[in-house]
Image 1 (cartoon, rainbow, N blue to C red):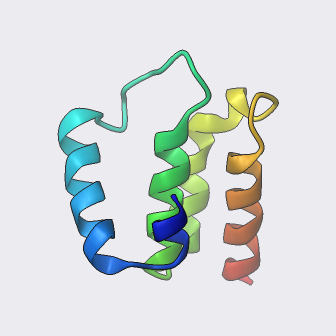
Image 2 (cartoon, rainbow, N blue to C red):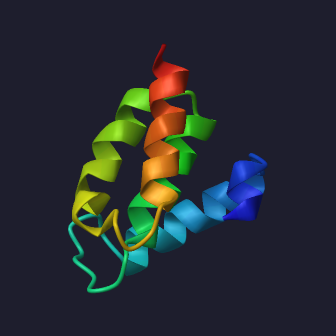
Length: 81
């Protein structure tokens, strides 16, 4: 996650491929969802804040368990302005 925040594109490409293969976006997990947060950061790295907000809708039920989706949504809203 730290590397994604630093916008490391080579790491980003390999993570995106692994996520798409191993965990499609429709995968439901019982733990707080890290994948939507990571996908949102990737969208922000690509200057697409609206997609980041859309991706984070999946994590909404888990927002009380972890604040990462809330933080990412805030960053996406700021980037969209």
